[in-house]
Every structure is written in C-alpha cells, then in structure tokens.
Amino acid sequence: MQHVRDISDAHGPQVVRVSELRRLAHGVTREIFERPGHPDQILKVVRPEKWVAYRQKRGLWARLKHRFTLGRYKFLSKEYRSYLRSAWLADRYGRNIPMVEFGPLIRTDQGLAQVARKASDGQGGLAPTLAGLRDDGSLFRPTMIDRLNAFVGDVYVTRVIASDLSTQNIVLDSGLQPARFVLIDGFGDNALLPLRVWFRRLNERQLDQRFARMAAALRLDWDAEARLYRLQPG
Image 1 (cartoon, rainbow, N blue to C red):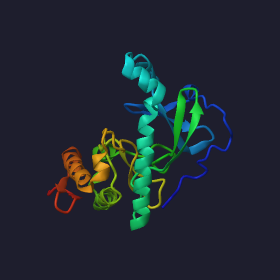
Image 2: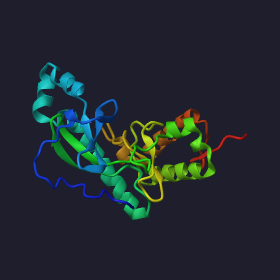
Image 3: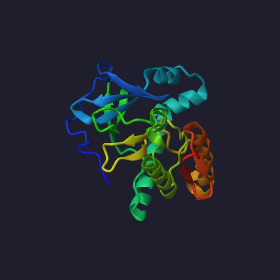
C-alpha cells in the first residue's frame, strides 16, 4: 500500500493563496489545485459560491448552524470517518484502500483545504476517469476489467459508503505501482442516521444498485451474483 509522501504541513501556519493558482478541476462542492511545492499533492477547497450561499441563509436554524456546527465543512468529518473505517478494514483483510489517500487540512485564502495525494496518469497529469477510459477504448481490455473488478471487490470488503459513485469520480491511478482504480470523491454517509454504516447489508444493496447502473454507462455487463463486470459479447 502506497502512502502519501511528505503530506504533513511542515511549513507552519502560512496561508496558501489558491486564488492565484491555476485550477486543475472542480466538482459540485470543491475546486482542485496543485499544492505549491508539492507536485504530487492537490488541495481540495470549497468553492467560493458555496460559502456565499451558506452565509446568505437566514432564519433560526441557519443561525444555529452557523454558530454551533462545522457549517460547509461538515462533510469533511464524514469523509475522514469513512476513510478511517475503510483503511482499518483494508488493513484487517489485506486489501487495498479503494480511495485516494488524503491527509491534513491547511489554511488558504478560500478557507481550509484538504491535502490529498494527486491521483495521476503517470506523466504528471491528473488520472483518467472511468468515463475517459471508456471513451478512448482503453477500458475494454481484459487487464483493465480485472483492475476494475479488483476495485469493486475492495469497495465491498472495506465497506465504502459511496454516496455518489459514478464514472467521473473513479480514476485509474498510475501513480501507484501497480496502477489501480481509486475513488477520488463522493464517499461518506450524508444521511442523518448512518444506517449504511450500521448495517452492512443495507450498504451492499445500494452498492449493487450503483454498480449495476454504471454498467450501462460503461457499456459493460454486470454480474449481480458474482459482483463483477464483464465485457459484452461481440
């Protein structure tokens, strides 16, 4: 298992000016930047418009949330708990952690940033997504299907709570040796009651549904009994 190299914030409390950096990518909630001085790491920062919308909310419930909760950072605690649980199970059963490694939070001019290892294409760029591998045809090789099924197995064994499993947030990370698929976002239980954390079968049923739904998008067959992807005949 490969760990994040030099991921601690060793330079003290400086504020990283991500507003002056080139954005690598963005999702619904966060923007992605390369960490200055660390080309193998990225910074994941909450998008500014999300903060604007959060602060503009009015009413008693909004005031209570502003004062007594983690606010827009609440999802981070769920991510860290999910990662810890999966890492513990991966260690227990000798499996890979099917999520990209991430580390501390550091200060930026757009709030706290989560430091994560940069899942890469092996040449300094960002790792290709499942959707990208489908589009260029690379996915339809037996060795690639084997890697995808190894990832699927790791997800079930380590009980990942994949709240937003998709072809866009699963990537082939060639920064790992050997290269393997990892989930870069969309994990952690967002429910008020974490039933999928408490009840393994409930989570497995939802994973079954999400992997089956992805099969159509990937142009693959999903073997529900074996929980494996297979190449379509012909």
